[in-house]
Amino acid sequence: MTDDPRQHDGSPADGSPGDGSPALRSRRSGPRRELRAVHALVHRELLRLIGERTRTALVLVQPVFYLLLLGGGLASVIPDRTVGGDYRAFLFPGVLVMTVQAPAMGVGMRLIIDRESGYLRETLMAPVRRSTLLYGSCLGGTTVATTQGVLLLALTTGLIGLPYHPALLAVLLLGMILTAFTFSALTLALAVRIRTVETFGTVLGLAMMPLLFLSGAFFPLTALPSWVAVLTSLNPLSYAVDALRRCIMHYAPGHRAVGGPEWAGWQPPVPLELGVLAAAGAGALLWAARRFARPE
Image 1: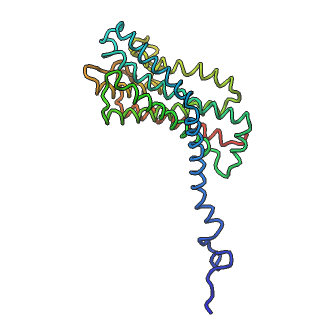
Image 2: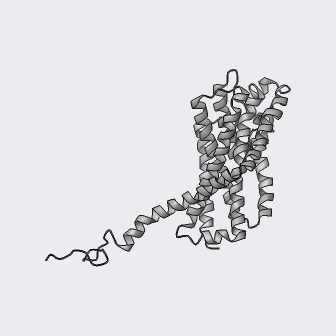
């Protein structure tokens, strides 16, 4: 009769961790638990998107209004040389940014509502890191916001005379993903510091509209006073709008991109603009995760 090299608990007789040891099982299941938590939070956001079809449709109404009515009306008034071509094509990147803005900002609002209702306290009892819950919320908000942006992109690209070119759509999708991610991260960074929905809404109202107007979404940045150039160069949304606009103008015959952010008279290329946007979102999310990880 041979000696069994394992003890009754499944670990080797010499005391070293085996396949069945609790420590090893914990190490193996840890990453899976974190991923399951992220998946659950993303799934929650997608279920809310599917269950609120009317609200989703209403969110798309405002960007379509700006693009077709405001853009169509001003296109006959604003000279083409001022905006580099048809004003609707100039306005389109700003409309895409507006489309992903609203659902991305909703992530921070839900974090505060969950805190007030006690749902967040129950969620924090899950055997995962606090930062993982914040990452999952950010990914969920990014996914929902990008989905709504894709819907608008599919509905309106042809209406303003732009081609459904695969390369153009891929670049616009990447830009919307990074914009949605940055919006979600920024609103979460606010939400971890603000305790009430009313204060959060007020702060967003004061912050987001200036960010949009200083992004060049509605008019070229060259039309602003020179001292405002410093603010536009610090605004991450100005890089999102300009990167999308320069990609669109590349595929729009007779159009050219005008009025983007500059660094001492030098305009950064599109990859660098997207990199600045991603870095701003990552920095905001890491700060928010570090702050959120502290026990309350």
